[in-house]
Image: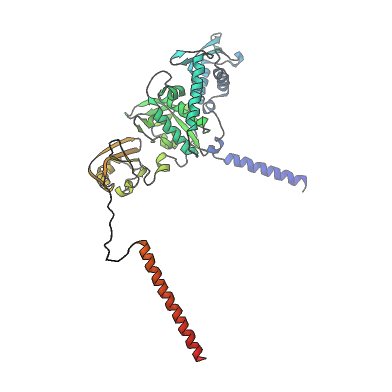
Length: 425
């Protein structure tokens, strides 16, 4: 094979590899570890981000910037916000700082402020050292008890743990992973940072997204949520809204960007780099629905019998039966279905006497709980004649007898035919 042929083959192979990379979906390209906030910055802002990150990670009191970079307050602000979205583990830095300017124009030094419990702390303080160790130990303890094997169930475990361990409440450290996981109280930023830190530590890429969301009153409010990568694709989660007090929802669990965008709008800086996630969803109800699971899909045309199969049954402290199902509604008007089918649904579920029915909903998720007594089904038996055995053993014995008689008959017929043929000879 001459050199010309070899060169042609090399060029062709390189071309194929390049085309493969260009044709590769965004989800595959983004599967490599990356820091989402940093991707929203231009090159000058990335420089500030990197300097700020190195200083905050080591709890430095002052961070010097190259005077020749001509860093502006706007660049510093953008870099600080991006770093906060990428590193929930640096909970002592919440974005407060002062800075020194050259000729009252460009920034030459940043003095970050570190806080814990609502009070200023220094990087080498015993309080901060203890807090860092406490959070690290807490995360390790949570992950050590996680038995899930696939990524989806790991995210579900950590999501449900977070909702059970945190109360939505304002207070010191309420916007940090530390406040959520150690203090047990947080607002949306605390929820999302704790979720992000848990997943990242578990080896699952998770980003924090800032923007606005339309609340239950129809009002827009500042909010934050998460985008998580599962099996090379991205899905959206809002652990804050899923925490409805005693009711732990999964209405905002594993949604596509299209579904999430119905009431969540990312800030422009994030929206410009957010992956489109135009693939099939991995919503909780889509993945986990099944007979007896307590999770199902409700359509306009569903019958009470079809929905009844999803319900899970448990007992409360008073010994009453509780039949519960979380339904994802795909139709136009959930209440129409409920008004038309609720009574018959209770009948299909075999409830007897008095019962209560409670319902809660969030987004397209509706959870129905019946509390009462499930009628015990009575076994029907067929009447038997004296001496007649209808058990499996009796039927099997009768079958053996019949087969034996048939076999003896066949043997006798063969013997008779053999004797007749010998006489003819």
